[in-house]
Length: 154
Image (cartoon, rainbow, N blue to C red; front, top):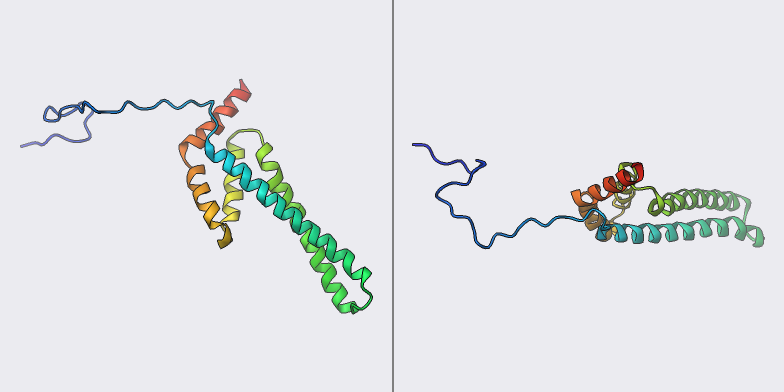
């Protein structure tokens, strides 16, 4: 005795079609996904934090020269820390600052994943980055980026 396979293309004669079946919703590729706006907010927030880190680095480089009571060995350590903060603040500030302005395409989508994944390395960001990553990797977002790239090409 053979049983009907649930993987057949034709419906089984033993199953009646549901009168309440919902037709599939056609997605409009011109509509920007909501996750994009959250990603832009995430990038702006991180760019502002990096700007603060940059300001802290400049402060650490300028402040010891104004205070004459700091020893020479402390001055070297403070100057190294200030330079490191400037380097990190400038580098990551630029990385997060340009992300919303990148041309739509698969490369921009991957760049977004890398920035979100970098934010996932810190537990304080998990509340924002885990949902952002979940919605970022959905096909709807990728199709939006590919559709925009196709429009730009032709």
